[in-house]
Image 1 (cartoon, rainbow, N blue to C red):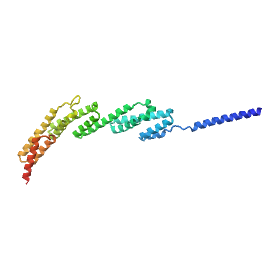
Image 2 (cartoon, rainbow, N blue to C red; image 1 turned 45 degrees about the horizontal axis):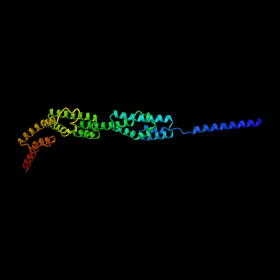
Image 3 (cartoon, rainbow, N blue to C red; image 1 turned 60 degrees about the vertical axis):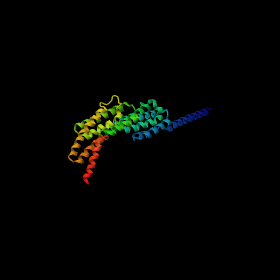
Length: 282
């Protein structure tokens, strides 16, 4: 009986050991979340692949804190890259990242409450990028003295975002800058540059006339500016015409038509002088 009891005890010990060994073995082979790959994707700037990898890892390990934390950390870092690009006025790069986050936002549901931003935040920042990019383009056009392009950019932007206060302020500033450049050119007797600037503002008056507050000048101010440019050029043209210098007279009057194209008197003068020049050359 004693021997049988000892054998039974040994058998139970063997079975218990085998069970513990089996549990230990199972514990060792339990797969751990693989997070190195999505992090590598992020660091390489492949944000879509990083998001997809974290989403896959989270589906496999929905209760793993490390997966949740890493996912949130990567999303926040991605958002900060967009914010930094906006500060640098690199609106194209910022918009690209923000749009990517917005398109993937449904995947963030498991960690949404841990994020510092919402889908609405992303949408508002994307709009800010659109407006910022338009403002940047307008500033470049203004610096290049392409006044018509400057106003065209704002016109198109207002069609997309009517009533936007930031656009309104930018447009008002642009019109004031153009007017100041026109005034400076007039003071230097650069009548062609001044006249063209006044004319662009006059021709596009409907784009900005209803701004609140309105620009500091009126239609009458612009028409007076064009007159102040037209009068001296007309007089110089007449002086050249009377001296028989038809080519010079025609050139001066054609310059007037650049900023006063509807001036029928100047157009007739050009036609008359051109016809006379042709007869002299025969």
